[in-house]
Image 1 (cartoon, rainbow, N blue to C red):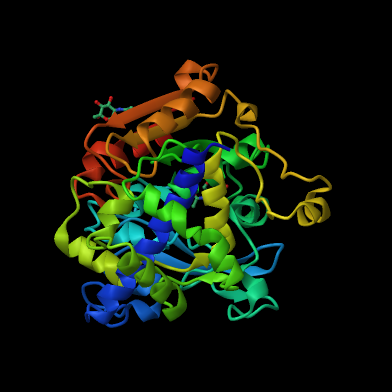
Image 2: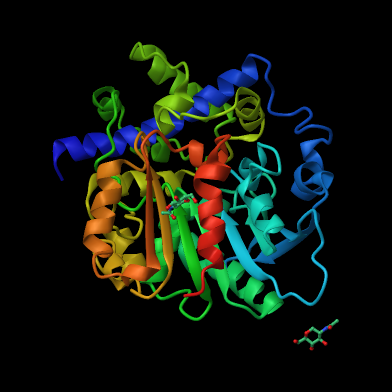
Amino acid sequence: MTFSSLMNAIALTFYIIILAWYSHQTRVLGHGFLGNYGKSRPYEEGLCASLISIHGYKCQELEVTTNDGYILSIQRILEGRVKVEGNVTKEPVIVQHGVMVDGATWFMNSPEQNLPMILADNNFDVWVVNTRGTKYSRKHTYLDASRQEYWHWSWDELVTYEMPAIFDYVSKETGQKIHYVGHSLGTLVALVSLAEGKWENQIKSVALLSPIAYLSRIKTEIGVIAAKSLLGESLTVLHIAEFDPKGIPVADFIKNICVENGLNCNDLFTLITGPNCCLDRTAFDDFMKVEPQSSSTRNLLHLAQTVRTDRLSKYDFMRPHLNLFHYGQLNPPSYDLSKIPNNIPIFMSYGGTDALADVADVQKLLNDHFQDHDKDKLSVQFIPNYAHGDYMFATNANQLVYTNVTSFFKRKF
Ligand SMILES: *[C@@H]1O[C@H](CO)[C@@H](O)[C@H](O)[C@H]1NC(C)=O
Ligand SMILES: *[C@@H]1O[C@H](CO)[C@@H](O)[C@H](O)[C@H]1NC(C)=O
């Protein structure tokens, strides 16, 4: 491991934590997390009621239980605003958000502007996921979210347990092959699931927005300072299993680092995601009312480990005997993205100013693993002025990105 890649690893963790502190600050400043969300309904009622049905979409709240016991909240948008007459079979689409946000993040703009509703209005049967640990997905068959054990997972478990549970559920309900669209961590989970052969008989096509797989080329201004803090280790030492951005221990910890290092911690969202070109102020304020959400510290550590190397591996327990116990070997096993089948239809869109899905990292992903992909089954879009957040709720993402996703899903391969 080189010194600079170690610094980058730490910098990523640091950035994420800074986001957390920022959110804590906004809460302290009175733009509270609670309070009324959305235009007219309290967020507390659930995503269908607060964000979806109010716009005239037929929406169903569902629960999916994973084999490791997590009970996930899923919103199924069965119908767009205009009911289609006749006997049409709708194709299912799973919509997967990134790390430290939840499904609400897609609904910050008008129905004409947001991805799930555009898909619903194009006659897709839309399934919006909320990852374990987020506001509506904190139930478990026997673990309470206040227990350390509840948070003993990283994106490995999303690949192994969470996604298969959702895919099996949607397959069983619809009897059809599934389209998948993911943002950020939702793309990493997809790439690894495909490489591991998890979705083999269930997937129809995949859209990846702000794809992350390799992370070692992330450019950060504060890497040097972050390197000194060795944050990941410290959090582990503090036994903080739930990485709750709104929790006092995490927030205070970050605040101290900012203060001690004389960091300007204003506008951390931009610092983390890049200079988003096209976010609406009101949408952004709404976003900050409901996000960021909890993740597990282990999940963030696993991401930080990914930043260190050009290799994708399972979570490194950082103690040889623990790796031996979990994996039967001293180092965590690698994932091999070259195993992604060449005939899966894949749409990818990446932005030129994205601070997390760095252009050089995306290009490495494309060069290393998609050279041999069937040419007619790979569609890559590059948007020079887009950053990470733009893919979630830029005001023009409908025209630039989401219509491409929709038409890609409608293509006959
Ligand atoms: C819809 O189509 C299916 C299969 O094509 C058929 O079994 C069913 O009876 C049809 N339903 C209606 C209401 O026409
Ligand atoms: C995206 O959509 C625009 C407008 O329809 C089109 O010109 C462009 O080729 C599409 N790009 C991709 C990669 O699908």
